[in-house]
Length: 267
Image 1 (cartoon, rainbow, N blue to C red):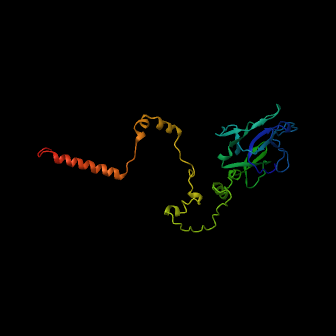
Image 2: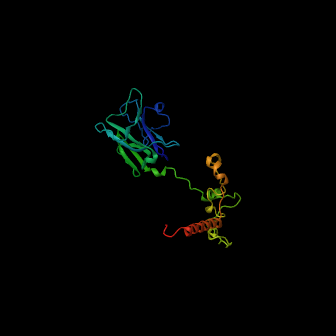
């Protein structure tokens, strides 16, 4: 078969091109150029070929392992026998059965991206791994790291993000490589002289800056219609400090005068 640059998503048996599943490619010849028919016999007209499917644009499940089991071996956990698309005259071998393990690409460590068929006694070197022999043919697969096929996140453009935060759309974005000029003293408080809190610095701008503060109309109605507001608070007057001191001194003088008029011995 031709080398695949994508993970395999499935394997299947098929009796011919007319029965090959949609999206699958049939392996009709071995690496040596011989027939890859897994049905052997004199004057045999029936045929079974191995088919494979490569990964589509969206990877949901990929083949992570391939095993060839004898009829006495139980199916391992997480594996499934490959599908059979054959005519009524022939069926796949039951003495040896081919099974695969499918996993989502994000959960896989390795994926099978290529499979080859050879004559039984022939060998292929690395990076191919021998799966086993069936019907006089050898089956090989190539595994690679799944990280080669996982999408990588695109790097964020920090400069454009900072430009979007700027209140002045016409001003250029700050360049982190340029040296920031020292701020000149303006006679303001130390808080405003700090570049961190300067309004010219985008990092000193709060999310609520420029939002006017008003009392919700619901609370204004409650205050205006309350009995306290209509009775006692209408004539409420704030006294100054001098007025409070005068009242205190006047009360203290009245108290001392009353104490002086009391007869001796009366507490």
